[in-house]
Length: 445
Length: 149
Image 1 (cartoon, rainbow over the protein chains, first blue to last red):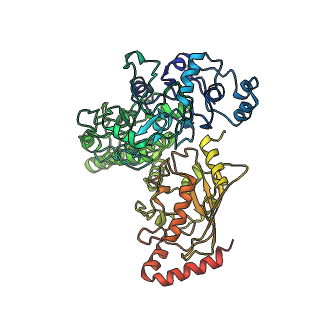
Image 2 (cartoon, rainbow over the protein chains, first blue to last red):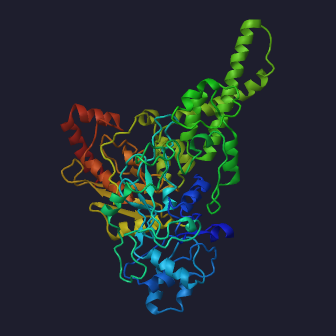
Image 3 (cartoon, rainbow over the protein chains, first blue to last red):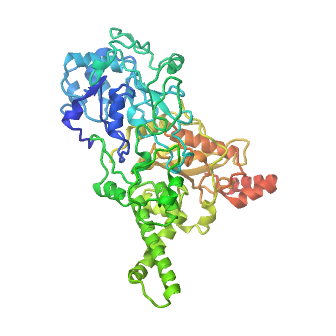
C-alpha cells in the first residue's frame, strides 16, 4: 500500500483505531497531522480505523474477529487474510476470499484485542464517501447525522477558489450541503488507548450495543436519537471557521481546525505531513512553498480580513498591487507545481514591471541615463510576459475540458483533448459563470 | 496503480443495478474511463434518442468531480458543440458524496429540463428563449439525425 507507518506511531491506538491514516487517499495530504492527532486523543474525532471492504450483519463475533478485522495499531504485514483463513472453517474461507482490507493486515492477535475489535466492528457502517466499513462509532456530521470516517473527513476542505477574506466560503457538508461542516465523535464505552486514562470511566452510548451481545445489531444508528444528542455534545470538529455553535461552547471561531494554517501556510509555511500519509515528491511540496508572493503592506487589509487570523507576516518584499490577484489565481490552480509556476511567473513579471517603470521614470527624468538592470529585464521580458498572460487567461475558470487542462492532466481522455483543441471559440465558451445550473445534486443517503 | 475501493464498488453497483435509461461501462484497459449511454427522457425533445457520453474519473476522485462529455451531437442550451455540459455539480458544487450514478441521473434530468438562462451554448440558448417551439423542433430533428444509436 505504500504506507510507511512508523512503528512507534503505528502502535499508538485510540479506541481501537490509529492516529495515522491508512492510505485510503493517495494524493498528497495537506491537513495538519498534529491537530488531527490531538483531536483524536481528545476523543473529538474518531481515530483512523481500518476500513473493511465488506461487511455482513450476519457475521458472528468469531467470524468478524478472525477474518475481517485488521489488527489496529500494528504495523505488521505478516499475514494476509487468505493465508490466515486456511486454518479456519470452509465457510470463513469463502467469505474471506472476497475480503480485502485496505492498509496493513493483521498479524497474530491477543484475545483482549479480539474482543475489542469484534465489539467495535459489530454493526459496522459504510462510510458513504470511501465505501469502506467502519465501527459504528465513527464521526457523524452534526448537520445531518451521516457517518464519515476520519480519513474522508480530513479530505474535506474549503473551496480553494474562495478568497482569504471574510466572505471566504466555509466547507460545506458533503451530504446536505449545509455550510460550516462539522462532525462529532462519541467514543465507545470501552474507550481505550492514548488518553483513555483521562476519560470518564464509561461513557453511556446507547448506539453501541453491549459488548456481550451476540445478536446482529442494526447497522444504521438511530438518526433521531443522535440528532437530539447533538446539542449536548460539545465535541464537534470542523474544517471551517464558524461562529458559536452552542451557547456554552465556543471553539476557536476563526480557524480551520484541521488546517489551522490554512490562511498563512499558502503564503509561507512548509507542509506538515502525517507520517503515515503518502508524501508528495519532495521537490513539488517543499519548493513550491518557498517561492512566495506576498502582499505589500498596503494590501494587507484586502488579504487578511479582520475576521481571519493574520498570517505571520514576514518582511514584505517590494511588489506591485497586482500580486494579490495573482496570488489568488495561483491558489485556484490546484496543484503545487502549477502554483509554483504561476507564482514564479508572477514574481518575474512583477519584477519586470517594476524595472520598466523605473526605467521609464529615469528616462523621463534624465533622458539618457541607463538602468543597470535593463539588460536583464529585457532578456526576461518575453518569456515571463507570455507565461503570465497565458496563466491569467485560464484564471479561475473551472472549465474542466479546456484544452490546456486536457493537455496537462487528461492524457487518459484522448478524445476530449483532440476535440477541445479544435474548438475555435474557446474563450467565449468558457467565459460564462455556471453557478446556477438548474440541476442541483441530491446527495445520496 | 491500484484502483480505490470506492471506484471498484461503484462500478460493481452500477453494473449490478443500472439506473433506468442509463448504462455506464468501464473500459477494460482503463477502469477510470467509462462509456456511457443515456436514453433521451420521454416527453423531452430528446425522446427516442440514444446519447453516448464519455466519463472519466480523475486521480482525485471522489474529492474532485468526474469529467463527463456528450459524444453524440445534441441541441441543448446547456451542452455545447463539443459536448461539454453546464452542470454545477460537475464544477464547484461537486460533493464527494455524489457518485457516478447521481451525476448521470442529473444529466438525464438536465435533458428533461433545459435551462436557457444559464447557457453554455449561447446560440442555442438564444434560440430557446426567442422561439422555444422552433428550438425544440430543432432539438427533435437533431435527435432523429444524430442520436439513433
